Amino acid sequence: MKLLHLTDVYKIYQEGQENEVRALNGVSLDIARGEFVSIIGASGSGKSTLMNILGCLDVPTYGEYYLDGQLVSELPDRRLSKIRNLEVGFIFQGFNLIESLTAIENVELPLVYQGVSARRRREMAEDALERVGLADRAKHHPSEMSGGQQQRVAIARAISTRAPILMADEPTGALDSRTGEHVLEILHGLHDGGTTVILITHNNELAETAERVIRVSDGKIVQDGKTAAEVTR
Image (tube, rainbow, N blue to C red; front, side, top):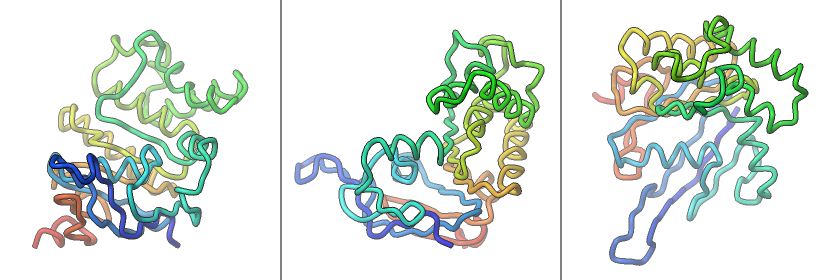
């Protein structure tokens, strides 16, 4: 079943001007519920722009994007905000943790915005930290944790709401190989539990861990296959 559906999507900056940039240039794409998909491309290829549109962080200049059967361009701001808060979890390379908050307080943040009671959100945050193996670091601040631990806190924050879609933008880019493998294990575990995972990367080896790989270049999808090895032949 189609969960995400894009038809002839364009994202154009400075349209009609001499310095016009077509970050996305006619992208059509379907992603089914429960898939683990990698979107791979070099810097400036359009992969992050594509993620932003899929995650309702941005809107297309032209074209249509349906999320679970709903035309996103017709949704009011309140509904889009709810989608970003309840239906999509985001993991960024830069972690984006608040230094003044402890790990568990960082994880609780999206639950605060949802209006979850203090007791319930603490339980949900504790569960999320347990799932990423950081229950013993709940009261530590980001400055007291390694880069890998901070990334796992960011993952816990993304999954604390139990969103059905998880988008990870270069989630291992700032990590050593061993810690990066641990993060990937967490993502695959979430996928095995039914989460739709979309992994944004420039790394072929990382992309190959997904069951489907989409290659983006110059704002277009140039290859789409079940493994990175297939799409690079």
